[in-house]
Figure 1 (cartoon, rainbow, N blue to C red):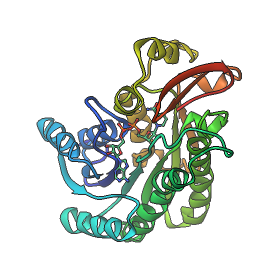
Figure 2: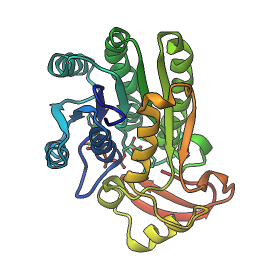
Figure 3: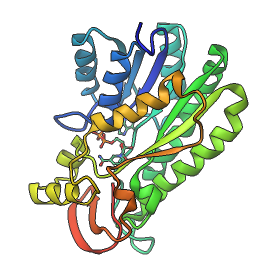
Length: 279
Ligand SMILES: NC(=O)c1ccc[n+]([C@@H]2O[C@H](COP(=O)([O-])OP(=O)(O)OC[C@H]3O[C@@H](n4cnc5c(N)ncnc54)[C@H](O)[C@@H]3O)[C@@H](O)[C@H]2O)c1
């Protein structure tokens, strides 16, 4: 019997913005491999490829297209998930965007608000829809996607760092408020992971890719599969005594207090001076 047999998971951002495997897709595949039935939420058609990948591996999943910043749509797809699978136990709030570059002085305010909506408020909307269903199941595990940028700040884009830092506080508040309902809430904080968001959206070149890999203690490049294993651990009922933690998945990069700045924005990758930088 697999560890997650009988459990149902919702994964947001289970598609991919380009070829390859992002954090949501990898986690969805691993959750399904461990026996969970997985609701794949994404606004892009690439989520259908994730479904194919899960089915090819003998897993069970279903696609629910939605924009997770739309409260009504989120409620509808979560209701549809429970109608389809019969219950709900795990929520991985993975969706996130790089957001606009800049400081508080020059950041585009409309893009700032969108970044808050996508990276932070969406987690409130999905959790608000899922928690009442977890109560019915008698327990639940929510995993929120933060980042090294949320742990350390120091990012070149104030919007991204702010949202990822806020995810940590959100996680701790949620963990406190829902602990007595046996709903655990934890966060993962990946370091510089090579995903489609980095390769496609942010256009990181090979030199920057190598630099990013060199910034951690192990000196190796992280992938979405590394992040997925952490998500799996926190989703698994065997981590039943773990709540309110922020688990870095960064090959020790958080220990570097003066890493070379590698700022990644939607506008492209830049390499700067001496400051902490992560995404
Ligand atoms: N790649 C890294 O180095 C890194 C590091 C730390 C944290 N993260 C975080 O991991 C998460 C996933 O990143 P990734 O690099 O795997 O990205 P990705 O771009 O490969 O995947 C993100 C997915 O989210 C979907 N999405 C975006 N906005 C959406 C919305 N409003 N509604 C529904 N779906 C939406 C996209 O369509 C895409 O399929 C993000 O929260 C990101 O901040 C990434």
